[in-house]
Amino acid sequence: MESYLYLEKWNLIGRYIAFAIGAIGILMAAYHFLRLMLTVELKKRYDFINRYEIRSLWTSALLIIIAIGFYVNTLVNEGEIIWLLVRVFVTIMVGLIIGVIISNLLKFYYPFYVEKRLRKLRYTPRKSPKTGKPMKLLSEEEEDVYLDEGMQAEENVFSVDYDVWIDEETGHTKIEKYAGHLVALQCPECSYQTLKVVKEEILESPTETEEGELMKFYKCDYCGYKERKAFRVARLKKVEGYNKSSAVL
Ligand SMILES: [Zn+2]
Image (cartoon, rainbow, N blue to C red; front, top):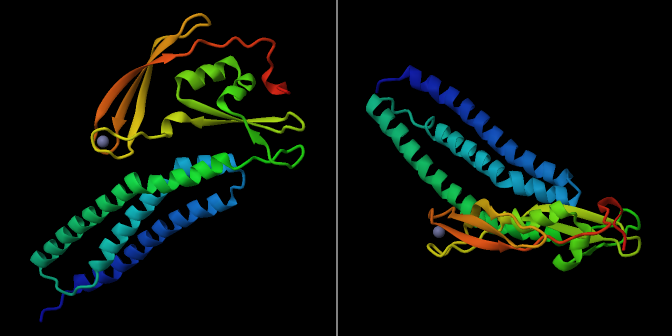
């Protein structure tokens, strides 16, 4: 049997490349969870998971798939060019299939798990920095007093959600801002919970005397289904003698 020197060399170098790429992939995921562990504040943890988790896992998975692809191609000593091409082709195809599967898992199933953790982080009672006791989360109606007009308008119009926590003993408040549009609805077309607001347009701004109108554009992440709905926007509330930083009961 003919010996293929270049193949032996490749088998060695390819393995180093595979280990290097694989190591980077694993380190990326490890780095994400390490940073998460070191982030103590609940709201910061929420934002961190929300912003980075799925993206980090995806990059990490991609690198690991590529590493495995390199690695399996260093295991064979059959050096004829036709087999080489077949191997590379099969590797790329299998890699693509696995990539699509993982991408779908991360896009359509993993978010359920993420949402569950996020909900827990969002609604765990905050500790008052004044007394160390758990604070109380105000309801939508109660919280308006603590939000300025701009914040209220944002809540009404821009799918932003403010949570107001209050220390009932001292009146100390903590306001946290959340993106309301992250909540996905069930798609009428494919039934996945992947229908999201992609754009909002104010058709008429609300005033203190009149309601406004808002158009929301939805798009399904899964099947691409699109729809839009018009919403009435509540009249702006008049807040008198209100000072955000010293809001006390
Ligand atoms: Zn759909």
